[in-house]
Length: 225
Image (cartoon, rainbow, N blue to C red):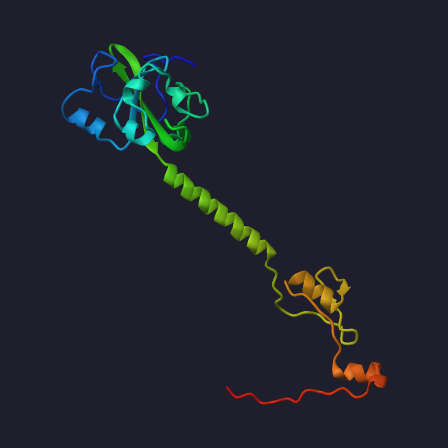
């Protein structure tokens, strides 16, 4: 992985203030800054020029299940399921990179967004990474995208008949948009979800099959609701 130098800057980020003790295993400095760091809802990680972890706040225990002491000295990339490269040329969107999938201590994954800021650490440049859990938001975005795809698929299947239909006064076929004449059943089946079954009406029964006798027609009744 490309090392960082003191003159490099990441687009979208401004140099941050110095903080932390000189020892890589030392606790965060006392006072208000230490309180802000340790009570942050985000994981805050300090790495050296080779991206080895120098310090991390206790939020890592709640979010990822690691003890902070077991991460000291490990590479920052070891936290992620898929390797990624970040250097002075890394393009960040509004100072943010991600979502990226992080590996929890139990092997499960969660998604985070990264922000990065250069700071001096023991007289050498270091990077402070902030990891914000966006798993819930990513799940909602995936569910929304899935719903949109389902709606688009449903709309593609919806066919409606509307407007004036040009029908032959003799054979009753319908002219489509391309000028071809189709049987009523074929046209309606193609442009709607209707399906046809076939029977025979009393008039056609008497005309076509007189040997069967006169058909009994149902009486029309007036229904008053």
